[in-house]
Image (tube, rainbow over all chains, first blue to last red; front, side, top):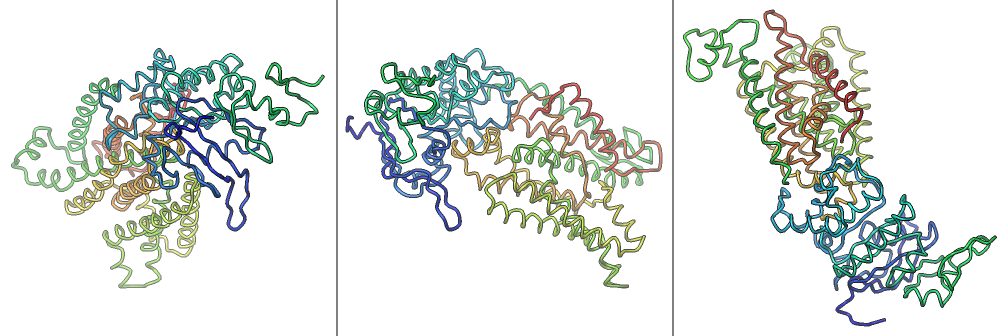
Amino acid sequence: MSKDHNNIILKASELSIGYKAKKAESVVASNINFELEKGQLIGLVGANGIGKSTLLRTLIKVQPALSGSTILNGKDLKSTTSLELAKQLSIVLTEPISSKNLLVYELVALGRHPYTNWIGSLTESDIAIVNNALKLVNIEDLKTKRCYELSDGQLQKVMLARALAQDTDIIVLDEPTTHLDMYHKAYILKLLQKLTKETGKTILFSSHEIDLAIQLCDTMIVMQSDKVIFDEPCNLISEGVFASLFPSDLIVFDTTSGSFRVNK
Amino acid sequence: MNHQKAYHFQFVLLMAILVVCFFVNVSLGSVHIPFKSIFGSLFGSIDNNTWEVIITDYRLPKAITAVLVGSGLGISGLLMQTLFRNPLAGPFVLGITSGASLGVALVILGSGLFGGFLATALISKWSIVIAASLGSFLVLLAVLAVSNQVRDTMAILIIGLMFGSITAAVVSVLSYFSSAEQLQQYIFWGFGSLSNLSWQELLIFFGIYLVGILLSVVSIKGLNSLLLGENYAKSLGLNLKQSRVIIILSTSLIAGTITAFAGPIAFIGLAIPHLTRQIFKTSNHKVLLPAVFLYGAIVMLICDSIAQLPGSDYTLPINAITAIVGAPVVIWLLVRQRKMMF
């Protein structure tokens, strides 16, 4: 792993995540360490309920970390204001948007909010960036459609375009492939990979598509019940990390093909 | 946004309709005054002194009140629907009307407890206005205090409804111990009324209304990002807590003063934003806010004109007209569209 610190966008050290109730702390995962570099595609995988969403919510500052630190572009996340954060990190969530009556163009243009004036007027350069975002995900023809007219796959692309229009160093996506068919799953993840190469942005996504993630990601964060591992996919395979991801009574990991098989 | 251009025509048309409705409203009433004299009294003077008084002291303030009430209720309804992501929300979900009615009920129904002389002193026009303002202001303070404690905006909605239930219960108890006359007076307040506002009262009304409207204009950007949901809005750099307070404050100021001066006028706040969304096919608040303003004012003027029962001496309760005229329109629109746009 290269240790060029100029290239590190997001760094987590000794991070502990979970929920704080009145007195008791319930720790979901702890001892999390990783460094995400510029222009990389990073997959976050793990079984259901292991804490993938909690980790992402902590990284995007929706909930506070229990301990440890997250450094975004050299600055601690705790001291980053929400407007500073909005210019460095954009998100695509699993929750549906409130108003499906929005035009695709309007929705993507909302990504410019951190940069626009008090009433949200778009300048020439804002419009250029919005159009470019539409072009990057190849949805220029959907521009004048309303969100309720779109399929799940199209909507996911629109949400991705909105995040791109926000023009941030890192984009975080929570399970961008749910509800999509096999083709669109591969399409979206391949698109994410293309975007990291073309725009130099760092993209972190959580997913259950481990097979696809292994093929496409530069590095992966694997969450297991006792530890969180961060490494390149080929190293993770040779170390047998995926083999121990799920109970082996039903599915086993085939190291030669890099995919899971059902026990017959 | 570059789609705004397309609405220029609609805006010009709506403004023209508003002006026409305004003049029609002023020209209608139990006393027939020719159109020419109306213009004369608005832009100069006329010989007939009685007509002059009727127009400048009665009809003109009433028409202006109608514009303020309609536009104000529409805008506060729009703010609440976006903030609570709920097409059923209106300006009164925060319990503002309930607070106002509690204040008024305490003055009208509770005055019996103070007895004789004090009772008559209490039931003046101003005491009702002050009681209504105070009531809605106190409920607003409670809601604001709670909204700072609660993370979930939906919880605020429910809390507003609960405040409504509590005040309704107190009003019921008060009603139980009240005389028939007091009850009648309270019920008359509940009918709502656009008339009887002096120019001085109108000025105070307008001042508070203006502050509320300015707050809503400041919130336009935040409202647009709230269309994506709260987490997305936050990720766009929106200070959610602050925006929420400003939006709630704006609604409370507008809806609170309207209730204080014109009574609890139903329906307009809920329906106007939907009506507007059906015609202006956008969710962008930069377009919706001025459009709702115009629609609200127009609809209120029309409702008031109907309530005058032109040619007769009767005036119907405005609260009944808004619902009788407006509800079928909304039903028809929704049936036609088969979809609740939001």
